[in-house]
Image (cartoon, rainbow, N blue to C red; front, side, top):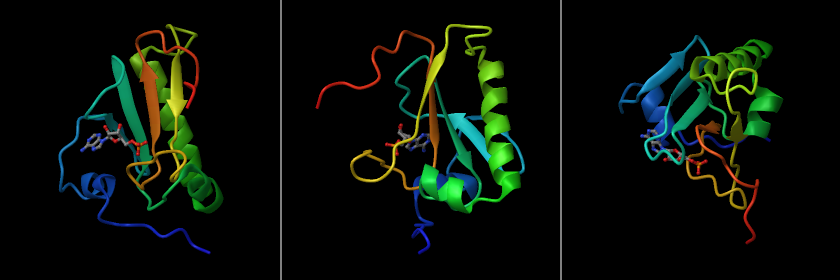
Length: 125
Ligand code: AMP
């Protein structure tokens, strides 16, 4: 059963160049850009250029080339931002999916959050 992809979602529009973005990194298969409402000093969204709705959709249905490119890009962005615990103070990645995950934009994305202490992983409720 394919995941239903809405090509009118805001990240699809960014990928088509219909909406501007502050690009952090771009490769053949991946785009990373600044979140428009940053929650932390560094708040970068990493998205595949392919039409995938959630992390599980991407993991199950993307090509090996897309998956490799996505995760290598993620690593390079951490280096570029100097947030890896190897160089800096660390980060958190989040990927919201579906209703319980409170996913607003139905195009798979990783949030990279960094630049201040982030507290515990989840708040009650
Ligand atoms: P999520 O709830 O995980 O789907 O988060 C969607 C994220 O996309 C939010 O953090 C928004 O601030 C961000 N966002 C929405 N529109 C834009 C945009 N045009 N450019 C950059 N980030 C955006």
